[in-house]
Length: 535
Image (tube, rainbow, N blue to C red; front, side):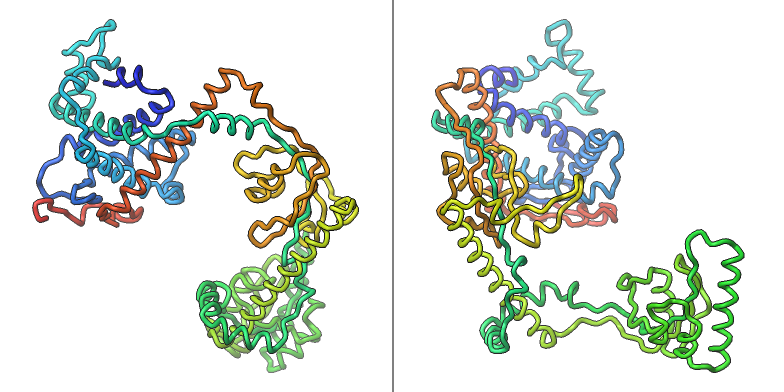
């Protein structure tokens, strides 16, 4: 069967089909596999339209995928890596997809005959000795290598071949026309380079200011939108962490201080603490004794200090949060020097209510809309000048940039930038990224100096450009070898898209239930059981 498929099917199609077969072998053979399945209660991983995927299936597949991932990364693959890759969910989904594919065989009228099964085994190189099938060798390899009986092995193999035939049938519609091959060739051989300028609302935010009437009207007309924006950022932007309002007396230590300098600083901070303990006002002692020029004139007032929310460092923040209002800390040292703190007020963690921030949200929304309108207006005006003969580089000259340094100014003000030559495939534009509308606009033009009819919008950004260089493709120069290669590559691409779309449709119309315990990296599977006879 396997060799018959190799000889009769197109090579690009077989790539996908055999990838499935390989995955099926990995997932199917072993305890808990479809070849071993029984009708007894056991720990379950998922059900697919009532059919069981056992925890044994999952555990074996997950272990195999984990080993593969580890091998691919030079043996350095941890549970944390698996969490980031969402490996457990990937494996469980693959097993569910296998079950869905197998279920399609009946609907599609597909079977695997005894002859096909026998042919697949006889032709498999792993079961041959001196170029011929050897039953005794085959039997020993199955029983000792796979750890199962020959009938069970053949039952599992039949299921894998069945799935492969179903996939092959599903992908037969992935034909590629000559026009598609031609377009693919053109996309690879066309190129262009452009001078371009971006216009964003952020660049013009200081030029707009909403009026009180506009804010009030927005709050009235967009209540739901404001509430959604608030809920989206409530736990991040509008959450105030616990904080303590403190004053500080500081004696700094410069880097590389000698032991003598450190002892002298210790004596000065101890003297200040003695005055505070003697009853002197902390703020007055700070004005007289603190050596931090930026805070001593305010009596050492540091304002509210929260964990990770101040410029004073983790050590001072931790000390501040330990204090109750009125308490004075002992002398402590950090990288800046010696400190004493006095807490004056405590603020518990809280979330600003919607009523308190709705005006702020409305103001930001109006400002964003207005500044974007200004950006688009500026882009249109600049494009008109380009069409009148002005050069983009003269209208918006680029600022000089030091080699190897990132220039943030290009995001703050419009500046002309130039791309290297690029192709239309994928809609990628160098220096910008994925910008399909912009790429399409570029390749709709034919010669250097051309500019678009209007600014091109990509999200909240408006682009204008002028063609710098333009190379056209000549499909008549495509060789037969290139045509064959491009067709095969397009077939694989189409097959992958068709395969994924087909699976997505199967999943949407199927009844899937997953045991969340098997997806956890912190618990072991085994405390939930599933009895297929209870359905």
